[in-house]
Amino acid sequence: MAEQLYTIPVNDAFESDCECPICAMHAQLERNAIEYTMGPSYMEDDNRAMTDKLGFCGNHMRILYGEKNRLGLALMMKTHTDKTIKDLKALSENKPSASTGLFKKSTVSSVGEYIKKLESTCFICQRIDNTFDRYIDTIFHLWKKDPAFIEKFKNSKGFCTYHYGVLYDYGQTKLNKEAYSNFLDILNKVYFDNMERVNGDISWFIDKFDYRFKEEPWKNSKDALPRGIIKTNHTFVEQ
Image (cartoon, rainbow, N blue to C red; front, side):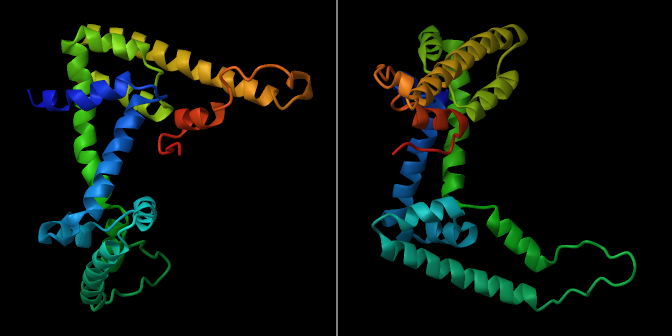
């Protein structure tokens, strides 16, 4: 089956010591996509046509700017802005009429539609999403086929809240009624047990700033804050 092609990165993520294996998979896909974008691929016509069309979201533009290949980024930006100028000049020639009268219609011009679409697309996000959906499929493929994976799932450190929701809803379409009920029992236990674990570490981290606990050991709380951020914000990547 096609899903088997993705079992290695999924298993590796669930074997890793992280607060959300799905975040770990997403982070690796993002790193791969950035390296691909800033590697020799930016000189290929097909890829340049896609970056010209899709552009980059603000988050990934900041990441790309932090990479070493400033010339590659400049070349992509040049052809992307060339296309944007050409397209918008053509669209802007057809000037819409102003809405007049008591009841003005709320309309979006062809210029506005173009910009709205451009703002919603990103070459890197698209590359990530194309593979990420297959990773989620693979989680449920392994759940149905590999008992050892279920044990890895149970023994993981849980998930961020966002990916907990992804698994919670996605399972409805991938598992039968009985299997889905069992999956939710395990998912809920793994998520809440580990959220409470991290919550307790954050609580002790706070207590350590109280003079009464100054001489007490830190236990597992020294890195509680970044781990808590991962649990509550799936886009955060610990440095």
